[in-house]
Each structure stands twice: as C-alpha cells, then as structure tokens.
Length: 215
Picture 1 (cartoon, rainbow, N blue to C red):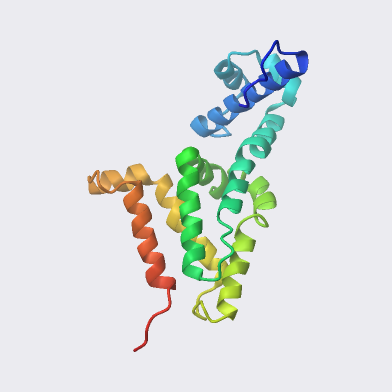
Picture 2: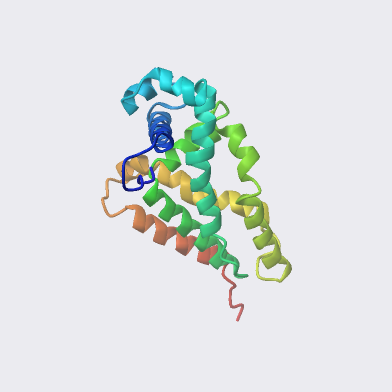
C-alpha cells in the first residue's frame, strides 16, 4: 500500500486507503486459501472491515478477484517482463537474465510461485484465462522472439524451438521454487537452498546454450 501524504486525510485518500487495504487482504486470502476457497466474509475479516465495504468497492467476489488480478498480480508479472528484457543477442545471457529476474521477483513476492501453480497452471485455476489473455504478449512472446532472432543469427542450435525454450525456462524457475519444500525435504540438505538452485540453473543453461568449441 502506498503511504498516505502527510496531513489529515480527505475522503478520497481514505477511500483509496480502504480499497488498497481490501485488495491486500484479497490477495492474501487468495494466496492462502485459493480463489475458490476465498469468501468476501473472510477477506473483510482479514482486513478488519465490513463485508458491506467489499460490496461497495467491488460489487461481488468476481469483481474483487478481477481487481486483485489487475492491480496486484499483473504488475508483478509486468515487472518480470521489464526486468528480463536484456536486449542481448546471446541466448544463454537472455535465458540467465530471465531466470535471475524470476528469482529476484520471488524474493520480493514469495507468494508468486504457489499462486501460479494453483491458479494459472491448474485447469480450474481462477486466474488462468485472465493471465492467458494479458500475459502472452508481455513475456513469453517477446522472449521467444529474442531466441528466434538469436537462432536466425546462428547463435542458437537449429533443433531448439525458441517458443518451447521459454516453456523450459519457466520449468527451471517457477516450478522448482514452488516445489522447494518438497525437494529440500527429499534430500534433507540445508545447503540446497534457493541460491544453490539458481547457480545450478545457470550451469545447466550455459551447458545447453553457450556455443561449443568443436576443436
């Protein structure tokens, strides 16, 4: 939530603050309980406000979810898109920059991987259609075009599909971050933390994408 300007708040400031408070509570509830399990009553209780205010600002649950998606989730994904636009032509650098952007974003917004898996990847996910509609031209398509340009310039192997390389990058970043409790528990090694995963992913991408000396 943005800090209020100094001085006594006017009605517009108070209304904005209330709406922001409800959006924060709505996001927290969707992350913790899932969109299907979120109710306006739960969100109001979390915000310390009345359900009537939720109806006033968002009309109903679908209005709240749309606002949470537009004003809380989409700006985070937009940040990923802008952070990962390296502009470089080296495919390994492009890929590593994207992965680093994902890791940095999850450090700031730790709820992102779990929400992505539950509400976007699942066929019943509440954000699936919204993000398919709004995200494709923000991240995967521009990234695929960068890889395609590198391939045309001879810097990416011909048998690598640029669009599926984007899919692979998501699989190497958001998926393992979402599943961290599972693989950390399976190997029972505290050293296998997020930074070690990031270094490992860098090594994989360099091995797969950097040009090889044939001599």
